Amino acid sequence: MSTKIIDQFIDHLWLEDGLSKNTLNSYRFDLSIFVSWLAETKKVELLDVSELEIQEFLAFKFPTSKSRSISRLLATLRRFFRFLLRENKIKEDPTLKIQTPKIPKSLPKSLSEDEVEGLLEAPDIKTDVGMRDRSMLELLYACGLRVSELVGIQLTEVILSDGVIRVTGKGSKTRLVPMGEEAVDWIKKYLTESRQNILNKQTSKFLFVTNRGGEMTRQAFWYLIKKYALMANIDKPMSPHILRHAFATHLINHGADLRVVQMLLGHSDISTTQIYTHVARERLKKLHQEHHPRG
Image (tube, rainbow, N blue to C red):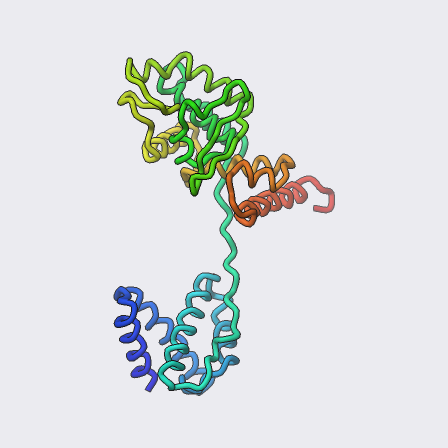
């Protein structure tokens, strides 16, 4: 009986949504686990399931499953019982009042301040390209930019006299971001000593250029970050956002207000920024354990 109903549901998904074979198999797998659990523990037929049985099943799965897996299981059951309700096979949906578990946001990977220092010092500043790369890394860390924002900066958006840059972020929103003295100094050196040499008589509206005369691509800069991380002996999984994460984490570690960090990062919603408070909290816990006499 259960197998036949599940087959009908899978056929319905395929006809209605045109789902892939892998997705359909996932639905079938989740439902087969639920049916097996019902048969072994509750002796209840699929069409007679109540909210209580579903809650107990999720509680049974919870200790050995991630929140995402529980959410997927519940989504499968919701879809299945809605289908049964539409087909008049049940009188009410037992999943209606069950809440989806909150999926905790994973903490972004970051670098320590010493690791950042090592990464920034990796480029060979005796070369024009090395000077450009050092300036890019300095600016990325000083401003917490997205890589797409960094490579897209135009000369007219850099206001060295005020120490700020105008950044165009997601949704074409612009924001003014302070660079800090260190980054300003490196940008000045790059502009006076290296940029024209790289361009080799070509012109470009972009701040950071290649010898082809165009702006650097995100992929090319991502390759450079990985190269310099290896040179700096940083043995961590690297991501293009890693200096952005370091920027936010280090600011909060040094007492910056969350709203200020939100504005600097260009987050439209402060809940996106709040993830960094967890990073800071973990660090404070560790410091407390290491240094407090009763830690």
